[in-house]
Image (cartoon, rainbow, N blue to C red; front, side, top):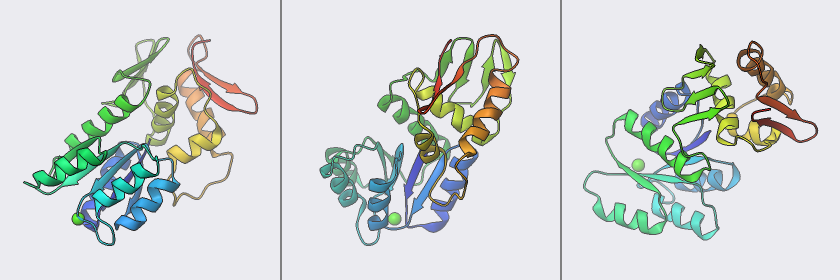
Amino acid sequence: MRILIVEDEKDLAAIIKQGLEEEGYVVDVAHDGEEGLYMAETYPIDVMVLDVMLPLMDGLTVLSNLRKKGVQTPVILLTARDALIDKIKGLDTGADDYLTKPFVFEELLARIRSLIRRKGTVKEAVIRIADLEIDTASHQVRRAGKSIALSAKEYSLLEFLAYRKGSVVSRTDIVEHIYNEDADMDSNVVDVYINYLRNKIDKEFSGKLIHTVRGAGYILKEE
Ligand code: CA
């Protein structure tokens, strides 16, 4: 899942980025409204965390421009304490949620997860495919009751496939959602990570769940 943070307080943006990356999210950061608008239009962002007070273009204008252009990326607005008017305007402009500064990081995480569920086709916090269980809150993965340890990148790939279970996901889709704009990688990186995942998720268990669809990509489903 790919998150865009638009926040001009660089220390705060860096702390949020680091925290989200530790949770396995892919994070892009913009430090002003114009850059944020550009990135939100250009990259396939799953959730945008958008500060209201920004240089060059304020957050509400960014949001209104995005919605006018038909970009429906879920947006969490960051508002100053007591800025009730911003909250009202924000929701009217098409924000999906807001968070008042200062906030507790865990609450941002919970709101991001909630938005991903609300906007996606998978509504449950624990995603199940056959005997595979993916707890999107704790990031614990179990198959046939056995706990499976995954790296952050492996987890983010599995979660991305799980939110789209039963649908074919292309390599391009995967790359764009599990790497940010700074990533430098060669094109077979997805296949490499799929192999890591297969070794952990499928190898020792009966019934393969990760399937290659030749010429199209991958699909997570029961056989
Ligand atoms: Ca600000």
